[in-house]
Image (tube, rainbow, N blue to C red; front, top):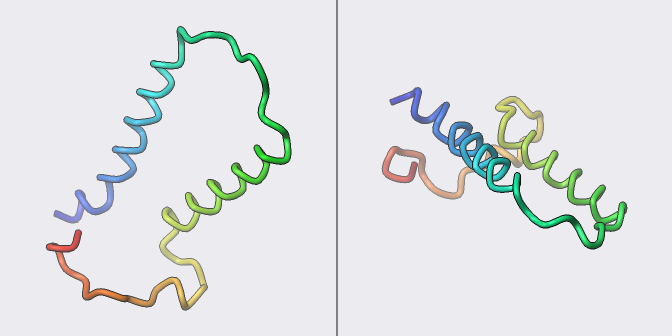
Length: 75
């Protein structure tokens, strides 16, 4: 069961990104571009989220506070 906890979400995200890339092959050309500042903010937010989800040893104590008891029924 440990492999499910470790690999379920990375596999789901990988499958989603692969699907997204495949579906984006034959789409219409871009009509207008996103402003650079908006893109930078979005990339920083997503990068931060990925790091927080992926790295189990971030030294911020408040990230590890539990608000619900842990168990497989919550997973």
